[in-house]
Structures are given as C-alpha cells and as structure tokens.
Length: 362
Image 1 (cartoon, helix red, strand yellow):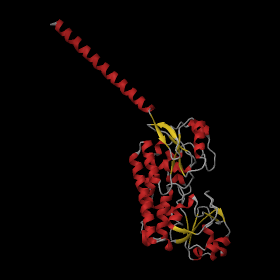
Image 2 (cartoon, rainbow, N blue to C red):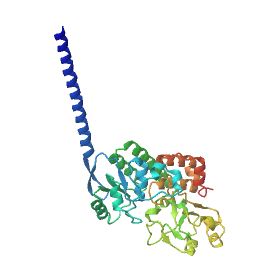
Image 3 (cartoon, helix red, strand yellow):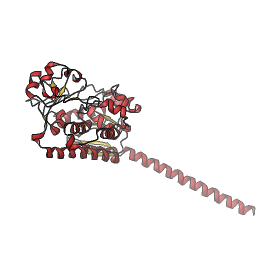
Image 4 (cartoon, one colour):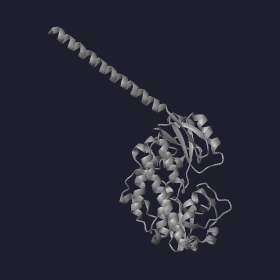
C-alpha cells in the first residue's frame, strides 16, 4: 500500500513539474514575442517622398513645431514626451495639468529654437512635422534625423486635407478610432462650409480684413497660408503682390485700409480691438463705424489659425456664424464645447465660453 502511495506521489510530482515547466516556457515565449513586436519596424513614405523606417508600435512622439504639436495633442496626447512651445498662462486653464508639465524643447521652423539635445534626451521614437510643404523640407528633416538619430517624418496638412493627415496619424500611431473621429469632424466642417459658401456665391461674400499687430495695420493677405479660412468664407480685401506667410502678415498703412474699406474686421488677440471704437481715424472704415469688428478668441490657440492648425476649424465655425448666421445657424456655444472636448480634451464651462467669446460675438 505504501509503495502504491509513493508511486502515486511521484507521478503527481512529475506532472506538476512538467506543467510548471510548460507554463514558464510559454511565458518566456510570450515575452520574446512582445520584445520582437516592440522592435519591429515599418517603412513610411512621408509627404515629401522620403522613405523613413519607423517603429511599428509607437508610444513616444515629439512634434517638430507648434502646428504639429496641436495636431498630435488632439489625436494622441498621452504619447507626447515634450512640447515645441510652452502653454501660455491663460491656456493652462483649458489644458490638463499632466500636459502643461511636459518639457519644452523648441521648434525647428518658426522661432528656430529647437534644442536637439533636449529633444534627443526626451527619447521619442519618432519626430513628426505637420503642415505646409517648404522648399528645403527634405534636407531639413534629414538634418534633424541625422543630428538626433531619431526617425523624422513630415505629413502635409491644409484646411482641405486635414482629415487625411489624421487618417495617416491614426495608422502609424495605432490610434485609428480617435483619429477617425477627428478626421470626420474636420471633413464634415470643411465640406459643409465650402458647400454652403457655393450657395451664397462669391458676389455675396462679406468684404473682410484680418488685422494683426500692435497698431492693427498689419494684415493677413490673400494667398498667405494663414489666410485659408478667410479666403473660403469672405472676400479678403487685403490683396497684395507679396503675401507673407508669417504670422505677423504684411504691414500696410491706415490709408490703405481706408481704400479697402472692409465691411468686417477681425482683430488678432493683443491688437488694438479695445481702442478703435473711440479713435477718430478708425471711424472712417465702414467695419468700425458700423460696429462690425471682432477680436479672435485665442485660448489655448487662436481661432483664426495662429499657428495654422486644427484650431482653424473652430475659427471656420465661428466666422460662419458671425458672417452668415441665416445660412449656417450654428449654436456657437454647443459647437465650441464640442470642439474643445474633441481636440483639447477639456469640458468647457459656460464661464470659460463667455470669457473666450467676450469680444468675438455681438
């Protein structure tokens, strides 16, 4: 009897040992498989035709500039390892604290203050540039990639094709579901605006000027990358031979504004919106004398597109409503809250909305 019992115990011991061994072996195999997936790469062809090898599973990303930062923040905020530019103090009320504490390493274009060492230290798996194609872009991106040793790609994004940009980002960052929501939003907003404006017709477009700068006499001219939504929704009276694509636009005289005599003026934030109503020289312009002038909301980003990123879609909705309320008939508060939730991940309060639009609606 004892021999039978000992034999049974021996069999059970061997069985348990074998089972544990199999489990350990399976665990090792699973771990090796995960390691293999983590190191797997794919070949990505960016919007300037560069073929770049990037990780198949990307969890850490960095923007090359402010335009890219806004787009990446909207679609994959938790993958950001740093920022190209810090949030303003006002903006921090509209952004979760975990994102305001991210390190800032500057931008390649624009200010040109990109700190390569700080960028490399953040250890992103890929650096992403988004926006307008530039002549030297291939060489510029190759330079960043060579200096940092980090794959660097460019995805073109305009107001017309932003949905395609989101679709590509969804694929390479494995955030297809969220990217689709944002892509659909951009496409629907753009298509609705363009189709409605076709019905309104070019002859019935409002004559509008977008004035920036301390004196209000810098304008965003027709043809500038920054003027895309103006050109869609209005007759941009600022028609110049050399439209600047910089954020401060082209400098003109007040006399030139008299000649253009826009029906509506939108002033950039930190311009002279609060003063023009009481200044005699500005009263000579129809938009001012009739009270049809506004200040663009700017938190966390300027609705008119500074930088010219997805914030322009909020500006598109706002301009549509103030210029052609009978044709668009938006509930601006509802649309603003929807946009801020989708793109900035914040539940906008009524108080915040009122503060944002204080000088933007009448």
